[in-house]
Picture 1 (cartoon, rainbow, N blue to C red):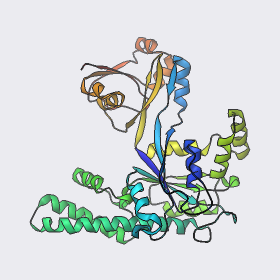
Picture 2: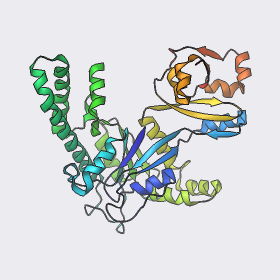
Picture 3: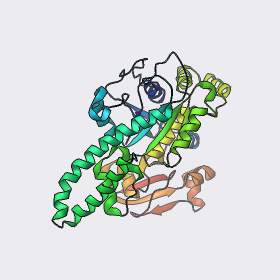
Picture 4: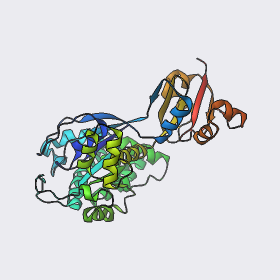
Length: 364
């Protein structure tokens, strides 16, 4: 599962990517500096891991991760191939969610591709290019499905009806994510269309250091504009975050954050938000060899969760032994949880909860 960072050139995407991933993407003050997408595997900050490590004292600890992709800046005309547009749009299509970075700071030394700072215009520029590309793909699909629908093919008629609704919204400059599938058939179809504007999105307002806590007039404009989108807005001073990552010690970083009025780096907030945006959650395995956070889709069953460790665990699944994280921390060990009746044995139908501490029995 990958979240792609998008935005106009020079809004801070590559600098943000560097903060998140420690992979040093090229960052410079001119458009199209990034051409190939950079991919970083980022640890998901989770305070529960430290507590489990303290209780179990394992040989190693493995955090959950999320893939972040730095995609080059889009410009007007990208849907028609302007500025390497086709390549960029293809890179976005391969991602599962979108992190849309908007410039919300004034700085005469950093070039804006459109000449002045206006996050509302910038958002509309990106939205329109993505919507135009989706509209092109929807109309191509409609050409094919119309013929089959006219013959009375029920599946084709269902697909045509959904495509017509999506097309109508796109023509009104509304993204495909505003279409709510009416049933399971439409959900499956929507997934299969692979539309860019159907992907979940969160907005990152890149602000100056003084606006990192409360935002500014530009952030207020963005919040007002996206209020009907059911999308999260995160305030981040990307320049300050970059400075924090350069500091050597934890203590130095904490002093820097306190001076800014923050309790943790904004990058940590963003990573957790991206994880949630991708509809991911975490379960734990905790033993003396390793304490590990495993990533699963929200709603995954116990066998599916077991399969993340190894496919044999899913194929030969017998049962899952489960302790809620809160119980594990309260009682301090697996043995004490058993004594207190907090150790559960679950079968194939069990839906894993975020934070479950699990052990699987299987036979292949």
